[in-house]
Length: 279
Image (tube, rainbow, N blue to C red; front, side, top):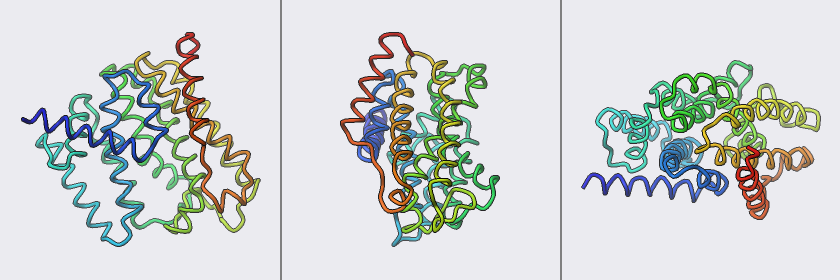
């Protein structure tokens, strides 16, 4: 039965999320049940595309991404795919009327990762972030608002700001790995040989501005989504604080993490604030 296959496909997307990101899984669990499936499906899709361009070094990444795109387009047009991740995504796209241009922008940024190692201008940098992160926030916003177009337009800037903040935190955390393994630098005109406390502070100030803007929108989300998004926000702010307190030279040589006990503390504090009507 097709419904059985769809259920198995969703379980695959959920498993991908759980195995790749404990923090994103924690936030998703705090969403209303009706939203969780769709957020797992979106994450599974973006994670697989990201894996192609970042991890499959012994394979033809360009060919793999092209085939992934072709399979995706077929899934969206025919409403079925034998790839369970894409089968899950098409269900989410159609059930939530997610605009195709958001998916196209995401894939454009993934293709940029195949050939672009440095972003020399602010325009290039912002274009990449829009496609790789902002549109993911907008896909999720479509899910949370369940077709409310007016509220979507109202919260669109804040959702994009949150996507940008998450992505920039990842860039800063993975600064060394991106450069050493992928020969890639995202922050415009950043010379890693001269990365210091001043350049780190400039990046962090930019991220904090994004977070402050995003928080305004989180408080305006429906109750069904607010706790989950706020939990993810608080986790990433905790990670940013840890990066802020880590010497720049250490960021260049180690991947900074938030311990699991601190993640659980973030979860507990967020849950308490929500149930005390402080969110």
